[in-house]
Image (cartoon, rainbow, N blue to C red):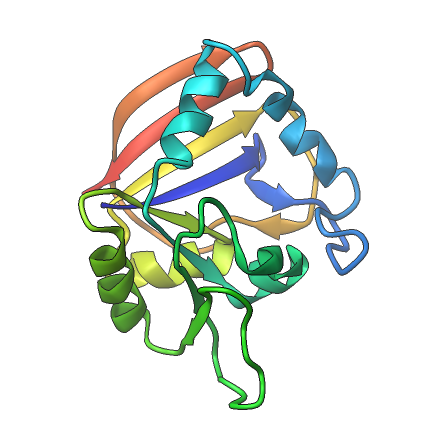
Length: 182
């Protein structure tokens, strides 16, 4: 199971305007992650975080990987990190278990194999779009925050897909929605 985990504003942005190194979430984008304050305990947000960190591999886009400081080579629990990129510089050696892939299907196949019986987590708008276009994205876990950023990095842009709602969990300041890609 390959599942996108992302936080999104009501108007469809995963980062505010001007996201860049030093301002990774863009102007106002940090507001999207206030719900993580509720990740401890027994509430819906804590449940979602526990599920996400039980995954066995990660697929991410190159931009997300770089803006996150390459996660120091370890996103969570030492799981393999599969980085989708348009080109690979042989001199650029990613840290830890991270590997670069230019082929979306190959990255998905290797991530599934590495995860074993656990799920594969996806981060990044570009990675989500590429996996969806290649028919490799199974589900979306969207953490919808009641804020309008008015601009920034859109999650899907012009991407089209049919989705089926599987789960809806409401917490104090976020709505967790899980969809299956049809």
